Amino acid sequence: MRAIGVFDSGIGGFSILREIHKLLPGMPIHYFADQAHVPYGPRSLEEIRTFAEGVTRFLLAIEAQLIVVACNTASAAALHHLRKVHTMVPFVGMEPAVKPAAQSSRSHKVAVLATPTTFDGELFSSVVERFAQDVEVIKITLPGLVKLIETGEVDGRQTDNILKMHLESVIADGVDTLVLACTHYPFIIPSIHRLFGSKIKVIDPAPAIAKQTSRVLRRMANKIESGTPAKINYYSTGDPEALANLALQLIGIPGNPCAVHWVGMNEVQDKP
Ligand code: DGL
Image (cartoon, rainbow, N blue to C red; front, side, top):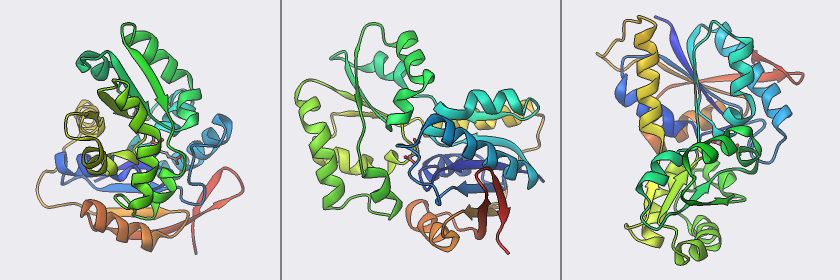
């Protein structure tokens, strides 16, 4: 059976992989982390589009039948382009979950946590325009946090300091809902609740993305295996062994580490 391709700059897409695997345990998955280039957040939209195109071509070459862009930054930079270029391939992408946040906020003040590039993309302005007419939307980038989470540090002192520095004052000012618009951030939900109390509402889009993935697969008339857990491959342009170990530690899903590397700016190949 062919596989689902899931990609991110690093381990952020694990938050999406965890939900897809829960929903479709029999589905083989190629997880791809472009750790040679992580973090994507401070890079330009053009550069990220080039990487996303290279990763997509690699995933298609290893027979991914559906691609989940499990990265808000890459979705902001490249989703539109990927759909235009690969017209036969179904893509599932990330969109900041501003709509449910606007609907559930009692204070009418929500904060979106994302990378600078996600805020720069058209997708963000479009969701705010469509769904957040009656609420105040505060944009928050959390510099340094993606790099920390990449090392597996999801609840240490440094993580706490970044969260306190950027969230304390907005929460004190009445923000009652946080939108996680970076796939690395679901791993710090326990820290958010420990620091700011369980009343603060945190919106994690991962379960909705997994449902959407399953819907798209069904539409493709795919036979979805639901029996024994399927094989997961962990591809990294950095250190695939470390990637597979972190997957086990953070989401409890074992898999096969696979080394790949960039040849030039836009082509990924297996590492000999
Ligand atoms: N996980 C990513 C996102 O959803 C990318 C973070 C980064 O590489 O800066 O935006």
